[in-house]
Amino acid sequence: MLTTLAIANYRSLRQLILPLGRLNVITGANGSGKSNLYRALRLLAETAQGRVIPSLAREGGLPSTLWAGPETISRAMRRGEAVVQGTVRNEPVHLRLGFASDDFGYAIDIGMPEPVPNTLFGLDPEIKRECLWAGPILRPAAVLADRHGPLVKVRDNRDWRVLTRNIAGFDSMMLQCADPVLAPEVLRLREQMRSWRFYDHFRTDADAPARQTQIGTRTPVLGHDGSDLAAALQTIIEIGDEDALHTAIDDAFPGSQIHIPPERGRFSIQMRQHGLLRPLSSAELSDGTLRYLLLVAALLTPRPPALLVLNEPETSLHPDLLPALARLIQRAARDTQVIVVSHAARLIAALERHGDCNSLMLEKDFGETQITGLEDLARPPWQWATR
Image 1 (tube, one colour):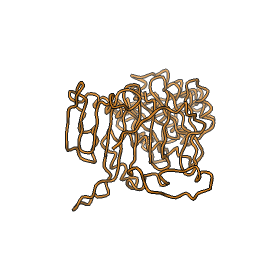
Image 2 (spheres, rainbow, N blue to C red):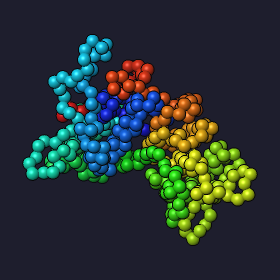
Image 3 (cartoon, rainbow, N blue to C red):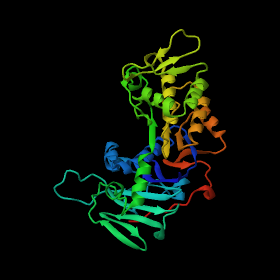
Image 4 (cartoon, rainbow, N blue to C red):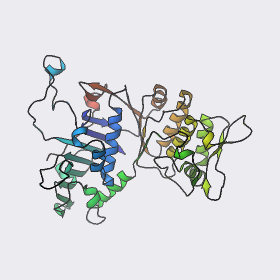
């Protein structure tokens, strides 16, 4: 389970360190930085897939994603006694992402490349530093794997073993150096991060993949676009928690049941609702009903991930459905760590009634995202690796 999430110089997240629990709710006003936090967490996950540099490129490159304000905001600036302006930089230009968990900590430092002649990729950012360590805080004695530019080394008892001296600047050490014998901790961390799942704004329009009949196969993990919804629901019925599935649907739509009829290998959804003489097909379901079924399939997965992140799951849902959704999220948190990014007051209130809910409210101050009311004593310790 992640205990700390750290982000520096990503959009409005100049220096944000968040404590995390089993069930987490991230909220705040529009423009407070919720979407930036969600995108930064997705970017961190892309590191384990080898896609962090292409993902940055899709966002406009490193210059478009970096913190746009001054390196430091003085007290005089905050009091309005001095103009908000840049000064001579003391640190290199970089984007930093990291986390600490029950077992390991990991951090990555991404910066601009050195000038290289005769290349069209001169604006591609480079990975300057990566560290993997044991325990919650980065300490020299706890480092298990370390990457400085093109050099990657791993701990070998009390000494170091060099794995490579020429890793490419666009490659993470988790992609190139995850060896079950030489670097088992790197491999374990990579596989853990690859299990993270993100669900963000399922399509529910008339042409949405979830409304179409699809060839079905066992689906323990719902696809990101929801195209395999019927197969995922049938998988829960056959090898997952069928009772929890029926309970979640009845909780939201009393007296309703779903059925996946056999159609020569093609799967579709039929939903029986109280008072109707025939079941409704997926094409007839309302946007909110279809979205709720998608969330049911995601949250009741027979293969729980290490981390499940939901971005504004309340979209298209009637407020009366939010308490049922909250109960579904709370149940999922028994088996996996959950982060919910939301601004739906009713959903947040229902989740906060759960005794172990870690609720964090974001706000902006001088363009910088901060956590409202987080005392210094509650702020988790964090140390970035230097270049």
